[in-house]
Image 1 (cartoon, rainbow, N blue to C red):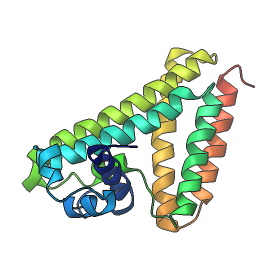
Image 2: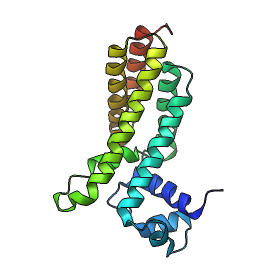
Image 3: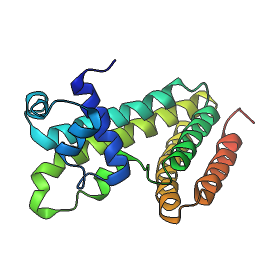
Length: 192
């Protein structure tokens, strides 16, 4: 069973993916996680910024593990799209990606110092996912150059499709992007 601190990090990630970072207050995280009221300042002396950073790290590692544990490029792709398809349906299209949420919301020039570490964590998560996808593509027979291009296309298209699916409350964009990327991956690898 996760510790109160771990529950708070997980709760923050879950709340951010549905509400965004700005509307997710520490009080919401405490309530969602069931952690004692004073625990936020005990576990996160860096305040809300530290909690957001750790929530993004958690979400980044969660997705990275799914990609890394796949046996092939196609399995990684199918797993990512399949998992998000289920999450969108289960949450009535509220569950987006917490990494995207903090990236989009970081434009407040009055809070640039607080946003910078969170954005750095989001950029690191995207880079890790892209590198892992590229590694699978190379292992499956794509050239390094083509794998890097296709991995970036996969990460950006995947995230964009989630945003469009949430906004339209329709899985069409997600399913279309999945099918197109799958065809590209199969054409570039030995999984044909």
